[in-house]
Length: 315
Image (cartoon, rainbow, N blue to C red):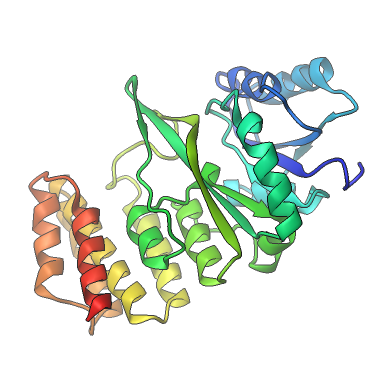
């Protein structure tokens, strides 16, 4: 593979996704104005016929300008599968896509010129906007066109498909870590903490990110709150700025409110205990208000928290 020709590698990890993979892979193959592309498919221990689906796809679509590598990663966890793809990547830029979503047909029409500019300028990160599909309704994911860490902490706008990385930058910051939920949120925070040379591309929202019971994004908070508390603790260890710590405190309060709304008192207790431990200086009345605001089912708590952080920063 010639680096001068191939700018981008797409990595798709999968685990028992035979029902979704055909649509996802075809959506990548059928993109308009597709440049020379390396696609790495990483099996993460599938027990269904996902591997066979990928083998058939590769046999039917492989070409000199569409290189398809099928590999496996025995270590459980999407992070390990993505890091396997990162290790195999030989192109200047890398992009990760989930195995149950739909790739935008016009992605390369818009992004190939931007990617060439990014390579010329040695940008570390292209930040993209995406669309989310929930119960048949499609919305553009919330975002703020900023490199502010506080925004990522509260909005989570740098999700998996929102981050197109310079490969060496991603390697330098440690790739994907072994957190089991919100791994893209954590990576987005960590990437911004390293002050990347970045550009937002907001002219067109890309892809259809499907939220369903089988997706990592789906499900309630009570079913995975322990993992959520773990990743919140990991991010706390990375932060030093008072504004970022304040934002993370508010995120804890919002999670506690969601658990309270789901009537899970033991989870609320654990969340509150971690909040008390990690944020003795950041605790305030507004945080307690956020918790009750969310518990009563009101929406937009992150917007209120973000506004509060901005007001604090202006003082």
